[in-house]
Length: 449
Image (cartoon, rainbow, N blue to C red; front, side):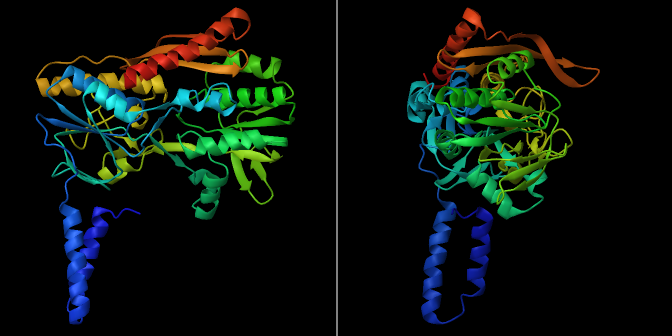
């Protein structure tokens, strides 16, 4: 486990206090202190910047767009993308991979290629602290200095309502029944669960609040039901939804549930889980339902990534669970004018989807480039384009397309020019399924080519 900078300071203090014991132990202490001192001052193995340096933390859909387009809008700017993963795996479209409708290669992409194609630096490292005064990012591979910093670290899960601080239960939920909305091992575990499922109830949940990818839990329920039906599995998906109704593309998902998967999906809207007994494999809801399950994937509420709290740029309210405290038009931190926050950590009520985050990345790149180049910039709306598959072979899909406008009286953003296509039947649904794949290819080209 990497030591934090504060841990290192504490260790240094302890070593200093114990340095008077015995000559042999003192020599060892001195050696250790030298090692720690060397670690503390070590700069990351990066070339010296030839212009103002912008460090982007987080190589998701927004961070990748910021890195690419900032370099295009301001070629003199030195851009470093810090990402802890060595390979990009897409969360959008992962539901199709879970049931073998696409292969893993379609979802995986190369950070090095993206950086090479777009003339920025990809630095594979984990950020554990940031010193805003000295403008330094502390990583497990050394220190990276910046002139401007972009934080795009994504989400963390918030299990508190289910576990009430019970860390043993939270650990079991994370490891045995992962949510599958942060790319990586969670998706592999979930895919294995689906492939090995034989009979009974497969519980999925839909959290409250502005969670990551609003339609994804309904899409996932549809595709797992499609897989069960195709494979002749004697089971069903029990979808426990904390919200009073399907949150988006309601008509499309409702008709798919009723017409395609009547015997394979049991939908429970307006139901909050009040108890989870993993030994008995049983959940209880506030509606009085007791549901036994053979397997499950529990998607809890979400919050902004913990890095925001470490840096001191998070806020907590009834509507924003430790998301970034920023100007909603400039994405600039209210606590630090040299820090910008984008993607799923922003507090505005935009959809937390890949397309939205990517379009915000374009905007944030334009904003920072304008600041560096001394130019004016004009706010533009993020764009939400979201396809959801409801069946496979052939893939049939529904979609939504929307922008956002600011309501000055209510001081909130609302949908603008929103439209949906919720007819998955016939040629229209098949065409939309093809559109889903073409949309993804276009987004990957935008981020990696």
